Image (cartoon, rainbow over all chains, first blue to last red; front, side):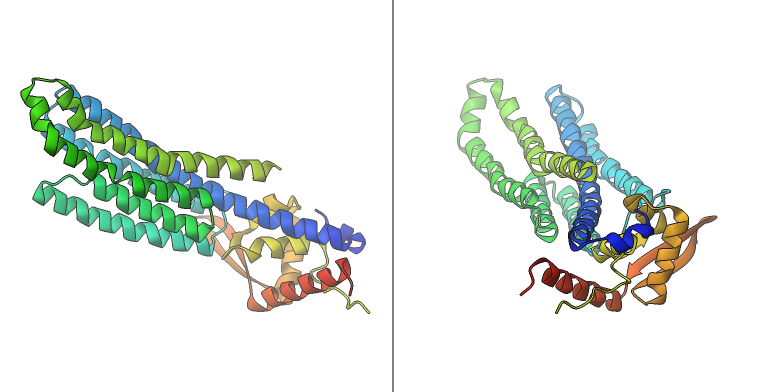
Length: 223
Length: 95
């Protein structure tokens, strides 16, 4: 794009340049958001599946409980690495107002989730339901800020899917004892299956939209 | 009669720079160079022209030992761009 072409530039070329530059810059911002969703989505899904197999295999409960900490540990370190790369690499990506808003939203949700986690450790309660609800809220807000329908939709779907946890609790409370008394081994799987549900919801909430955002941005960037 | 387009913005490279900066808080020199495909020398000259016209602000600093130039659009630049687009509309569909 050399300056000597300026005198011959017509209005259509101007529009073309404006559209192309705005689209490319916005694609770069989208691609970056996609990376964070993929990082947290895959980390949660993989650690959850590991938890499921560890618990059904009869691994020590305390060890299993500590394994959940791998999610914030890997996700947190990955986030730091991604943001370091974005801000300190040779080609530092542009800073946008949207980035700042999204970052603020997730900082608040991350901090709140940390408080919930500490409280859950003290009270010994299960926080899978609360985690899904909180992260769905963050996903919907991110979708609204970036005007990405896919994030808003998957966030809302996950919010609805979170109701599976109380529904399952109700079912186990009503019929679980009867199943256990009948000697069914299925009860163990039913009890642990909420981890699989948790992993599936995170796949819908973060992995799928993460891939969509990343690929869409990549396609737009190469267009 | 159609009003003339702002000559400072009616240039491929300068228009591209302003278009990039429009949607972001700030952008790095290297990033703008990659997006526009311009040479470093030419880009420096055009950034300087936009800076002198107060359409963009330029912040020169260091990242470790590496020099770093960051650009961002000013309110005056944003206004000039809006005006440019308005006039462009008149060129495309004159009343």
